[in-house]
Image (cartoon, rainbow, N blue to C red; front, side, top):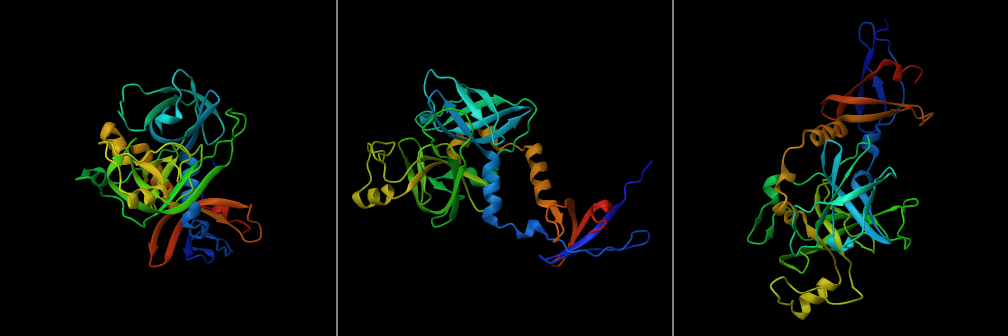
Length: 321
């Protein structure tokens, strides 16, 4: 029976990785990139957005949605109520291009808020779900959204409407950065409270708004400079003054995740599968060689001392590197 031989490597910054030889381990010196350190925060957040954003297809229309929970092979998608069309059947197109039949979760009533939940059952495929802020930051006190501040950088994603309304192919995900412009003390119609500079276009409704830690802080729903109607009426029937309305018009708007959690508190429960996924993402690295970037393997960060990180990998990953 062949023995599994493991090797430990050290990674310093974005310099090379060298094998630490000890006892029976042969010494190999090679140049490889610590790709996990080279990937920018924005690129990581884009990858995360791509993994949790889905298309919601309904008749000849639709929009975007965010994978927010998983139980077994049943996935829950958060989207806007205005994305759905009464009497239509719904389909979810996942990041890998598969299309699943979906049903509205009727037991959850979001009232006047522009929110809806759909569920679908995967046929063996596994998908990521969004990470939420800490539970303590999901509590609204006197109208304050505790996890957000104005001018904070945020990232928005969604699928721009391709005008075809069908599920043939999948348009590229639109992902952009911006900053929070306004945090309202009370919602305007639909539950909207987060104003931000990201360019939200038709079809992106229901897509995620992430903070710099990759946490879901809300979903898209209203683009800046709306062409029709006046959405800026507060839920109590009052209207903003002219100065505030002018600022509101220049911003895109999202419904905060706090509004969702108030109606579906079980979303804040510990999800061991998601926790394990997050741990794995944080400690797994890609090992490549400079001569041939396509010749690669994986490793696991097991320790660090200062800026030096020690990575465990299989010995065959290093042979002839």
